[in-house]
Image (cartoon, rainbow, N blue to C red):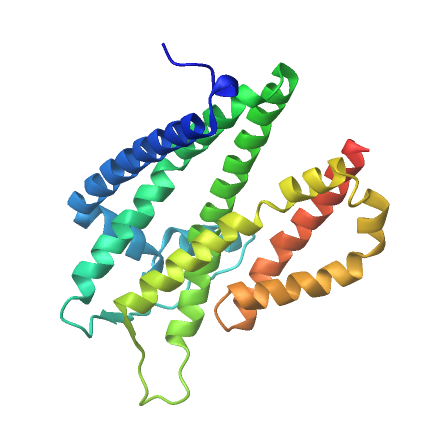
Length: 259
């Protein structure tokens, strides 16, 4: 029978950690393999935000029409191309791995929690479960925000922008997928702001009064962060900065709750 984690030697902990990484790799690999086999369904989902009739545009049209205005988005078509012989296959492979990691993220969090939980007190263990769930939910909200709002609007603006009628945009598949994955991942990460603020508040590094005092400075920093993580257009920058600033206000209240 194995010893409890708190009685294991350093080598024993490394062995437990190695087994955990192996289980995570198997789960990620399994999900990635399923995604790879479901090529048509996967890329139909990933390429949907590039279509002129994407669901977000339909929602906006219905909301505007419900207010009594006649409004419809103009139809547009942007061709995606592959310029290298192996680019489509490599994009398919890397996308499967990325979605495998994304799909396995609840299991990864579970394994990490299971690894560190023996070193926690019972109260800390219950507390950690809530933190892990909050981190995952905020990550999912950030991913959905990117998929349904930020990326499609950014793609529509940049893809249809033209300096002259004779110049037409053709986007490479690599560029599309890399922009999609990087923006989605970054949104999932930056949505962890309230969690970071919670821990900083618990450690006494920041106070709600301090965060409230430096709101204007925080807004400038948020604009800079939004400019770094988004494609180079003003519309997407604003769409990212608004929820980030709202998360900052939530963080102020979270820190106040910890005091």
